[in-house]
Length: 221
Image 1 (spheres, rainbow, N blue to C red):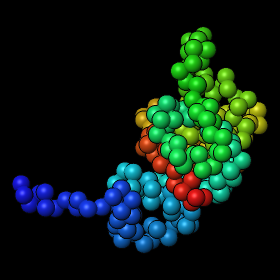
Image 2: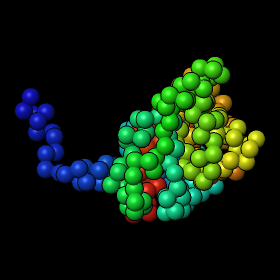
Image 3: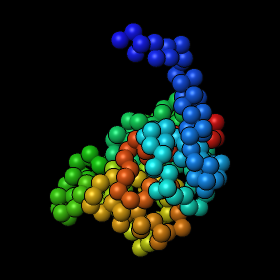
């Protein structure tokens, strides 16, 4: 048992542990895989590897339209952040957000899936609350940062708004997870010119959507 305790590095703070984690990721990544990404893209990719401890996520990661630059520009002008789950909302770093939003308030992030009118609309239409929320709040989505880490129909819904009504978020992070509508919703992003980051296939999740925006914010700090 003493050997197990001895194997632990006790004398590093959180920042030191993160820096060492990044160093190990840089040392272990396949150079050919690293070369697929620009420096801005690699900051996001490295953060996602750090979040998952899984290098196999890298081949499925795709960037379009310089999403880091688009995300930073949106943050600097105080764009609304729309999230498809309260887990994303809770996971976003308030200290980081305050460095971009001088008057940051909780209302800077919109996650209406639990609102009574959304539940009523979803029941009336026979659709998910995630899709209902996107449809009901369509007028708030122009120029927003759209973070999808849970519900594929939220992602499909915002793409449909872009195609049919010309609603254009500043950035879409498309990382819903699961088995139904997931792959297809991500493929729909090919229909729009909005900058996006997506994880192809069935993998995704709210922590990865959060990590993506954190990595973009860190680039601008």
